[in-house]
Image (cartoon, rainbow, N blue to C red):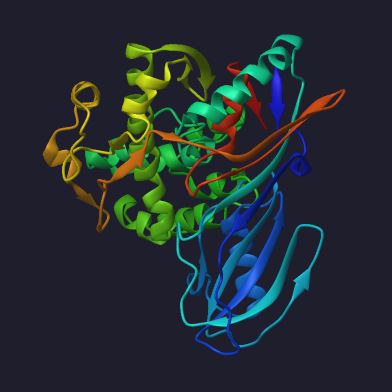
Length: 379
C-alpha cells in the first residue's frame, strides 16, 4: 500500500503569501518553521519565547503535524523581538506591519511529498492520471486534518451538543485516542478525575485543563469553555466537512465513471473518465455547506444535499442552533474541483516524489488519492 508521512521529512509544506513588511507597525511578522509539531503547539511555544499570549499570535492555517512546514505568523505588540532555532522549531523575524496574519489569507501552499511503497500497478497508472488531473483537476474534498476530533471517536462531538448532552460530548472528546486499550482505560476511569489525569497522553495541554476544571466541580457544559474557541469550532468544522464530502462523493458516484478509495471511516470517489464537454458544465461547480443562505445552483446537487441532511436528521432549526456561546454551523460555498499548479512527479527506486502548489483550503493527501486511485496510508 502507498504510504505518506512515513517520516516527517517526507511531507514538506511551504506557505505562499505576499506579506507586506514595514519598518514599524502594531504587528511583528515571523517565519515559523516546525517539524513533527502541530501549529497549535508551535504557537504555544512561540508565545512563551516572546512573552505574549497565544491569542496574540495570528496564523493563516493549521499545518500538518507529521511534516516539515513553513508558515507566516504575526505577533501583536510583542514585548521583545527574538529569533530562535532548534531541530523542531524555529522563528525568523521578518519585519512589522499594520495587519495580523488571518486564517485563509494566503495565495496557496507549495508541497513536496514523498510517497513510499507504491505497487507496480500504481506506478503504471500515474502517467495517465497526472495528465487527467492537469486537464480536469481533482475533487476538492476535505482531508485528514479536518477530522482530527473524530478520527478515533465513535461519533461526532457536535451531535451530542445538538442534543444538549454535554457529558457525552465531553466523554467523546476526552477519550478519543488512537490506543484502544488507553481509550478503554479512560472510559473506565470516567468521573474518577485523579485516575483520569494520570492516564492522559502527554501533550494534552487543553484537555488536562478541562479535566482539572471538572475535578473542581465545574459542569460539563462550563468545562467546554476552558477550551479555546478555535478548538470548540473544530467540532463543528469536522461534522460540516463530513457532510460536504458526502455531497460531493454522492454526486460523483451517481453520475460519473469513478474509482472509490478508503478515507478514514468512509470512502471518497474520484472521476476517472469524463468528456471535455461534460466537464465544462461542472468545472466551476460550487457546493454549499448547508444550503440555508447559499443555495446550490446545480439541481442534482440540490437533491443530494436534501437527501443527506434528511438522513442525518438535520432540520433548518438544528442547522441554525447555538451551543457554548457560538453558532454550530456556518453556511458558505466551496469549489467542487480545483487544479494543482506545477505538478511534477519524479519516480525513484523506492519512492515517488511529488511537487505541486495548491490553493488555500485544498489537501495534498486528497490529490494523491486521486492520482493513485488506490488506498493511501497516512502516518
